[in-house]
Each structure stands twice: as structure tokens, then as C-alpha cells.
Image (cartoon, rainbow, N blue to C red; front, side, top):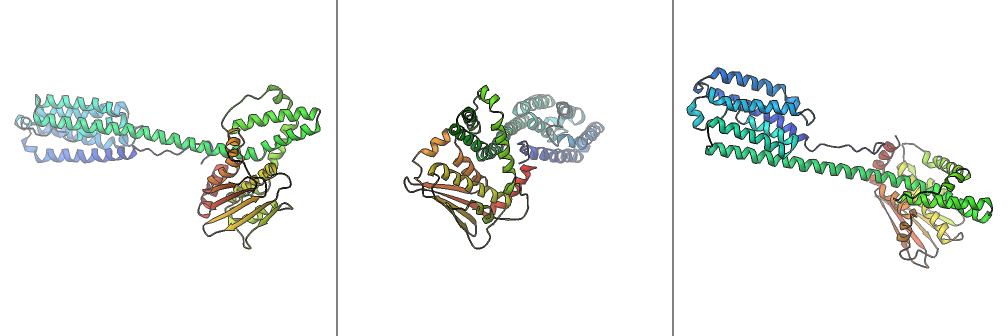
Length: 421
């Protein structure tokens, strides 16, 4: 998605304008051909020739005007309908009286419908009703009264134009709704991405400052208290709310806490996430730093290639799962990472021997703004087109299974590069 959250929109009514342009040309040719076959029956053929010359010139010259709604102005529509009405009213003057009374066609014939349809596409059914009513009046004047065939044709144009106008209005409303939904989805994805970054860096720093300040005491305790207030406010913000931050915290915490946050976020920009290489990345290399005395890593003997952005997101999700192990299972809890390279997907499993997660605890944590699992793990995998499954049994530890389909990696990586630009 381009930066700024803009969503490319496709006009659903554009095909209607193209169809209208083609209809106007074909209807003009039909009207001229109809006149040519009955030329000898006209009492004043020179008047008809002059009118058709104007009609042909106007139709061809104004084709760009019916290319889209922006060019089809009210002034153009008024002039276009005037030419159609003039042709209808001039028919009794140019044609023989017997042909008019017998229900012969008007000089513009079906070209008039194109003018009415332009009103319908431009302004909806109300504009179509106005234009078709004027055409109906002109036809009644041309025949000298309401004849059966005239009424039939008038009602047909009236109903058809109003129906098309109504369909256009519905299509426009649907297009606006779809565009708004796409914008909301794009904004939500960007918000979740930022929330993950904040959770992985800023919130952890604030929590660390709060804990260390309480242990040290003195002025550090006050600093830790203010860091705790900032953490609560920031968690509420990234989870969708907005709470005021105490002024004392904003003023006094602006020193050490802000500097610590900046240092951490700068460090996060280095290392694997700073890599902008275009080639695939071996996922094993990104997971290797997590291995240690308490974390065991089991991996395939061959490389596990993933697109750079996808590999970084999977590694970050594993890091978030291990952070949860350290926080909630205790400093002595052991964890195991298993990497499986399947033909269609990559599966990474993180398991620990902690006490497990009580039922309902994840939903409660998410309600409190603690979105480690929701954003840092599940959110990342969802953006990759995969999923994260968490299984926990009290007293038997927790297992997080991350699945990434290989078919979506290149596509996601290209989208990620577009976002960074």
C-alpha cells in the first residue's frame, strides 16, 4: 500500500460512459440512414439535411464530453437535450403530415434516448426523470396529442432511463462503501504494524524502567512510576483508545525514559530488520541468536529460505513468544524451538515447560491493552497469510505453532518494500 494510506479506486460507472459514447455514434448513423431511405417523402428535405448535419457534427465533436462524469457538465447536458428536443419539434415541419400522423419516427429517432441516458448516468434517476419528461412533452407536441405508440415509447424511455439512473446511484454508493472499507483495512493494518513495533521496543523499555526503578528506590522509583503511567497510556492508545497522560509524567519523564526508548528503537533499526536485500533469507540464521542455555533450537540440515520481510516477521514472532516465556513462565523456564520446512509452508513451533496459561487469560490481557499475542504473534502471521495457533494446558506449559505459506512470501515482501518507500 502506498504511504499515506491511499487506496486506488476503480470507477464502476466508467463502462457505462464508454457504452454511451458508442451508442450515440450508432444512433446517429441509424437516424441518418432512416432519413436517407425516406428522403423523397419529406416536404422540406433541406431542413432535415441541415439538422442532421448539426446532429452529426455535434455527436462526433462531443465524444470526449461523454468520456466520464467530470467532462459531462450540466451545460453540455442542457445543450445536448436541446438538440434532441429541437429535432423532435422540427419533425412536423420537415416531414410530411401523413407520416407524422401515421406514427413515423422523429428526426433524431433513438438518438434522443442517448441524451436522456447521459442525464441518468450523470445525475441519477431524478435527472433522468426530468430529461425524459421533457422528451415526453416534445413527443406529444410533435404528434399533436397522445397517440398509443407515442405513449408507449415515452413510457419505455421514462422507465428505462430512471432504472439506469437508480442503478448508477446504487453503484456509486457501493463504490464509496468499498473504498471506505479498503481504507479502513489499510489503516488498521498499518496501525497493527506500528503497535507491534511499539510492543517489541517501547513498551518493554517502559516496563523495564518501571521494575528497575521500584527496586532501586529514591528518585529512580519516581521515574519508574512515571514510566508505568506512560506504559499504561501507550498500551491504551495502541489498543484503540486514547487516555490523557499526567502532565508531571510528560515533564519529568522526558529525560532518562525518552532517551532509553530512543536508544532501544535505534538499536531495533539495525541488525536483521535493517537488511534490505532482495534475495531469500535463511530463517535458521535469524533464529540462531535465540538459542542458549535455556532455549534449544532444532532445525533442518538444509537452509530454510524465506523472503527477507517474511523471515524477519517470523523471527520477530518467535522472539515475542520467547519474551512471553521469560515474563510468565519464570526466568528458569526452558523453551524449545522446532523449525520444519514443508513443501508448501514453513512451521515454527515454540514450546516451554512453564505453568501454562489459565483459561480466559489471553482475552483478559487483550482487554487490558496487553497485545503481545494478538499483535506481535498472531498479527504478524496474519499479515503473512499464515496463522498462529496457541495451545496451553495449565501445569503442562504452552506451545505456539507458527505457519507461513511459501506462496505468499514474495508477494508480501514486495508489499512491504512498497510500504517502506
